[in-house]
Image (cartoon, rainbow, N blue to C red; front, side):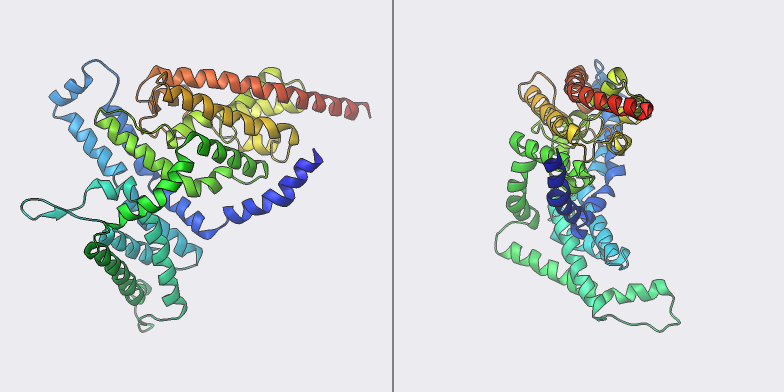
Length: 428
């Protein structure tokens, strides 16, 4: 046990801290969160457009074309994910350098649109499609956001800016100070766009997706890769580091893209292509939060005998149902607790295997791209995430029961230790 704790404290924890505080990864994570309200709102209208009632689609079509209206709202929210991220990543990265975040964010957004191919109709009217403004543009949005801020920072730090008299209002002065770096950044991406155009290499989105999307998809979309990700996330949590934030900085773009691809297929009535997606991870693998600790909470409530366990069971049940497990992580505790080391890694890995194979075999419907929110309790979330299939709820119930059994086996040993410690304390 001491060797396990020593490994966590001396080897893994320092790595986790460095990764978790790396400014570019933080900017990616926080920047993508800018789009989260839109995704949740879009999910709500996606549910409304596809309620599992007989003849519901016909009813929507016969009432002011409500189905088309709902889909327009869905596209106008989900379909802006990349556009919002291009601003959000740049804004957060600039803030981490203690720079004004708005100007770099706007410059990044402009550069993103320059790299995004336009659609031209037969009347030569041009515009942008949702394909690259949405999840399909996330990789370019992230790269543009980071690169544009790094260039912007050089100009600001070296004071290569237009300076206005002190009598000029600060807002106006800041606008002019961003002119030179903004001109250079936009020119750089415009040149890149032109080079790609004349060299027949395709647009930046296709090029970057082929270069980065393939390798990352192998990690974030495959069964083996997902298991590795879950193990690494659990190890970070056991060090007291928010594992989802660390790993999610890299893999959230993949999971969001998979979710949106599923959403488009669902709207079109086609087969759902991806199993691993953001709803799959949040609503099926991590029931109760990191480590799928709702099973542990239930085990504590049902089988806890020590005073500490009974207290923790009462305090953590309500948060656990809504997938909030910080009180349990640091109160039981799970962090740096060798007794919880094995089940905390084993349970979410088991969940991945069961859920992935159940969906791959067709026994359970796949998550259709509806983001029901990570705080929605299990059973409800499984039904909604699969587009109104009861199989999603049944799978969650089965997996949760297995989680309780596995956690119970290890928790009883830990609870007996607490009972002995309490007995010794009372005898003194």
